[in-house]
Structures are given as structure tokens and as C-alpha cells.
Length: 469
Image (cartoon, rainbow, N blue to C red; front, side, top):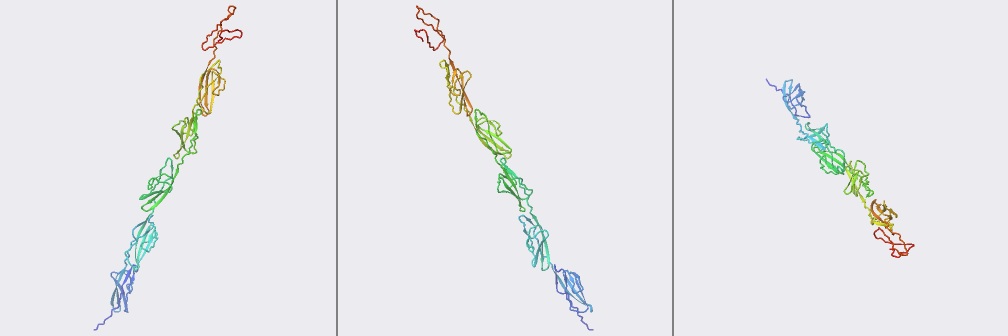
């Protein structure tokens, strides 16, 4: 018996194919040159056939070894072939970078995307709540808002993509700053503390500045001292985020000195022994007054504008505005003209039977506007009593008063004028008779008076033969 060799059907599983991230399903390319009643069956032990495993071109989605078996149903001859399904699905390496923070100093920053992959890569950054200001197709675009940023890198050779996200936060809160309330520098408060404050905590720097005032204390504290009016600005910087806030306060000045006038100079005299000073001011408000003197004398009203004084000296008026503590002073000199005029009523004199009227001998060394007046209560002035030397004709006490009309001062002096007009006692004696026997007689005159007496006998019808004195 002869043996007939039956040919096996031709079986070709096709060329190897590769699964990628882009081509996750592939069609195998089985083929045959045989003809006839053929059946096909694909099998695999490590792959996966999705469908059409009884066709030459099944669909698979896993790597593995795939076997194509072709059966010639007419002679039951079978032949097989295999094909390898490979994979190129390596995901590209992607790292969106470290977390960063947008601050007032870094208001825009660059994302720090990286990859170790090489090849035909495409890069894409996306965000739903942030803002990309730079080129999103680079690894390091710039952004200026907080949010979640996602970096996707695609390997165009295998269509594989990987993503990584990074969260960008923001710390751009401005520090709270309050420069305080406006204040006023006065003569009483020549230096004051600014009332800066903040509710912000952390690493803060503080700085006060001014262009028209003057800071005398530490300008890096919330409450420095200042001594001039002006606008003062408080700047607070949060060094953690470089955010800065400012606030200003106005410092005013009420340091106007009150107007003060101590009045005109006056003169204390013998008539005006007390004077009222004529202080005044044009300033209004809550004022206090104080007069002082080191060489005069204030009788009353030392806390008023018009005190009473009774001595020469320098008087100073101090006016204080209690609303701003400012004081101002002025002085006035009060003179004194209290010199009494010199007066001398002269030497005493005597009115006699021979000098029945005499002139008083008043005198003065004073000059000026003088008035002269002689008075008496027991004598008699016959001449002009307003002269220094009036005539009088009666004994008595005579008073000379001289008044200085410029200061009202007057002085007195007295002189006593005595009288010596007593008649001497005289007795002519007894009557006698001339006779033829006594033709000459001696008269027997006598007197009880003593002193410097002179005697004289006279007759109109007789004849004195002896010494008549």
C-alpha cells in the first residue's frame, strides 16, 4: 500500500504587534495561502482575546503569545503559527513640584514641574481655580493665583500620559494697621505719644514716617513720641508674606500764646496812694490771670486784670490759657511821686506898739507847681495869705501849708507871733502949787513898770526948767 502525503494548511499568525496607551486594543493579522474548507481558532494562555477568535483577525487587549490554528475540514489537517503581542505602555515620569505660596513679595511665581522621561513628550498645565500667566506647555509656567495646578506629560510615541498636581496657596493678607486718633500738641503737652495699634500677629516690622512733623521717640514702635504738628504715617510690614499696610494720623498744634497787655505806666502820689492796674487781653477762652511783683505791693485783685497796688515797682501780668496751657506775660512800671515840699514858716516875731504890723517870713526850697496858704485860728492875716510873706497885725500861731499840685503832697510849718504892746505904768505925782516963796517945783513922777523905759515930760502951757527925760 502506498502512503499519500496530505499537505498541511498554511498558517501565518502575522507580525508582532504592540499595545500602547493609545492603542489599547489591536487586531491580529493572521493569514493563510491555503484554500478550501478552512476553520480558524486563536488561543492564548497569557493574553486576552476580546472577540473574533475564529477569524484571521481577532481583537486582543493584552500582551502575550497568541496561536493561530487553521484546520482543513476536508482532510482534518491542522497547522499552527504564533505571534507575540508586545506592550509599550510606560507612563512618563511627572512631578508637579513642591507646594509654594504666593505672597505680597512673590505675587507671581513659577511652578516647578519636572520629568525624568525623554522622547517625544508634550507638556500641559491646567487649573480650574488658579490662573496661569505663563506658557502652560512648559514645565515652569508662571501663576498668580492660589489653586490646584495639574501637570500632564504625554509621550507621543505611545500615547501614555501621567499627571501630577500641586497646590499653590496664598498668603497675601495685609496686616491690620491703625494710626490712632488725631491729637493736639499744646504748651502744656509739648510732646505726646502716637497711638498706633494692630491686631495682626507674627513677624511684623513697624515704621512711622513724617514729612512735616518730628518724631522724637523710637519710630519702630507703635507709640513713638512726637513734638511737632504734622501728618504721621504708620507702615506695618508682615515679614512672613511681605505684605504692607499704612495708616495716617494728623497731629495738630494749639500753642498760640495768649495776648497780654499790662497797661500804661502810672504814678502813685500823695493824692493817688492806690492805683488800679489796667491789664487787658484780646484772647478769649478759659483764661487765668496772675499779677506778681518783687518790689511793689499788691493790695487786692492779684488774680484779676485790674488789681489794686499801693507802691512803686515793676508789676508783671501772667495770662494763661487753660485750654492749651500756654502763658504769656507783660510788665508795667509804677512810679511814685510822693516827695513832700519843703516848708519853713520863718522865725518868730513880736508885734509891738511900734511895729503893729509885720510880714511873716515863710520860705521853701521846693520848686514846681506849688500852692501856698497861710492860716491862723488866733491871729489875723492882713496881707495875701497865698504868698510866702503876708502881713499880720495880731499875735497868734500862723500855719504855712505848701502843696505840690503835681503829686498832691503838702507840708506844714508854724510860727508863733507874740505881742509886746502893754502900756507902761505912769504916775505924774501929786498936784503942787507954785508960790512966791516956791517959784520952782520938782515934779514927782513914778512908774511901777520895769525894763528899758524912756521918760519924757511935755507941756503945752507950763515951763519945764529941768531935764524933761
